[in-house]
Length: 447
Image (cartoon, rainbow, N blue to C red; front, top):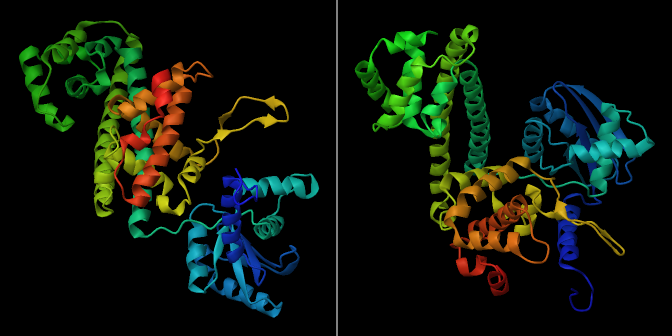
């Protein structure tokens, strides 16, 4: 555990390194310029390292107009005997990035404080929930002097573009899922028989094309489509198939959808309006899928620009899109000092619960970036079927005699392992090695 008899753990050493890096930025020779950012009203305070306010100003300005204010704050710091100043704020919206660029142009470093810490400090200040912009600015400055802050990520243009595309993809997936759920609800109410035309209707191109033809021509009356006859209906579906990214159909599904036109099951009074609305939702879903395919193609092209495609796809079962989404959520992995830091950022690290002789259950911390946690979780579901190392690890974790995990807990553990391995693959530019990623031989034997 110790190093040269110091007794320091690995966590102690890493924390010391992180604090040393922060102290180099928030040095005693620099005053703290804390800004509580808002839309058009900014509160600025200049403090020393004892949180004593040296100067204060309220500014009616947008974030882009804070250049003169930063110059004023730096002059106040110099007048108070400091060599320079460090800027601090909460990372809210886009304004902190604007402030970061302005501060960098003036040679002033910027650090960020988590809003959660500001909220906790607000209660600890005077045991109330009293909140004003002036008080929040002082609390931000105090947290910075305590080194309860961090240096934000400053990605280059390529990584910044990947992060923006990842945010768009996450939103499109949510919208696509919402369209599917809404469409299912509408059909279950007005025409449930069509949902039985395929085992997995929302994954069947033939079913989707058939439904599009029916809803477009029915105008709320299914008998209109029935009167077309099977031959005309089949030709219309064939013409519709390319719009759903296929040219081949599965005739039993198309026939089952056509036969469902005679099924009267459903709320009759709701059918015309529900089918009209279902057509609109279906079109929304189609457009959403088209935009999703476009953004995924853009993301994979960025992986090619970064020369990462072959490396990330060396992990069996991990797709280029899945890896791109993980990297879009976490940013450039090299900004994390070690793979465990990336897992902690995702909230997939265990939260220990021990005190004295008490040993409670360890659970996931749940902190960090939810989008990264979700991206890793989704990637594991696909990788489990094609990656024998992950499959063996899953079997061991769920069947071991000592403290077996549930299926969900095991997948979370594998998601953490995936993040650690992806960090190594990307930062060291090496291909995934199954021998290194495999569990110990004792685990394989136990499984």
